[in-house]
Amino acid sequence: MPTGPREIKTMNVEFVNTLSDNYAYLLLPAGSDAVAVVDPGEAAPVLRALAKHQRRLTHVLLTHHHFDHVGGLSEFVATFPDLVVVAHEVDAAQVKGVTHRVVHDDTFIVGSATVQVLSVPCHTRGHVAFLTAGKLFTGDTLFSAGCGRFFEGDATQMFHALDVVIGGLPEETEIYCGHEYTEANLRFAASIEPGNLEIEAHASWARSRRADGLPTLPSTLRAERSFNPFLRTRVPAVANAVGCSSERPVEVLAALRTLKDGFRA
Image (cartoon, one colour):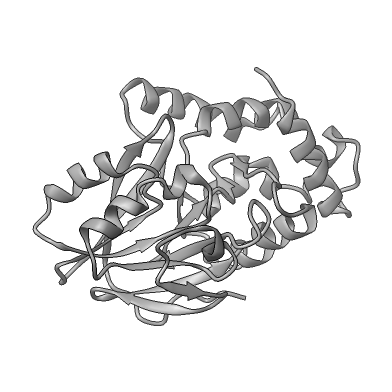
């Protein structure tokens, strides 16, 4: 069970909008001139964000191999020859430019902060999340009010990722996802638990944030457990909504994902 990096330093995070609904993130550790980028789906907006900081780009962290998360990498590698590019050893085989292949529970240093690797295969076989200073970068595994599609894995793997690996972290862990999907995910959540007032309240808040052009992230693990159906697979109302038993949470998760894949609202 992950416990988080033993060395905790303050880490500031800056959102970078890429493509249509992706987020890349700048990690800005306190007391250091280093900066890391998580999932640069395209180079130009990330480079513009970097230009505002008097810091050295030292690392690119890749949660998985999909192009909308790695599309800007080639330009970064060409521009910054000493760049450390981190990816899981499985997905690294599909991404040109990876310099450091990692596995579950590996750690490395970005400036003054320790980053821990959490292996969460399912969306891709080598998907990882990165944990640093109480902030978790989940790529396409956990979204606010949702989870990623099971492209290269199954419900058992996703359940382990959500319930054991991510679920073993402190409740106050901040969640930074790879996409701005919150409003659509909450519409699905409301169809599963129409009586859940937390869903209604968070949907109202999310609409307001998006109307102002602001992200709905970060979330927290505590908040997600109150309205994210994919983290509520043992709740009888959620299980009943998909015709399963709450004593079989993996089956509930599989049924939820199947419904979500075809959901339109």
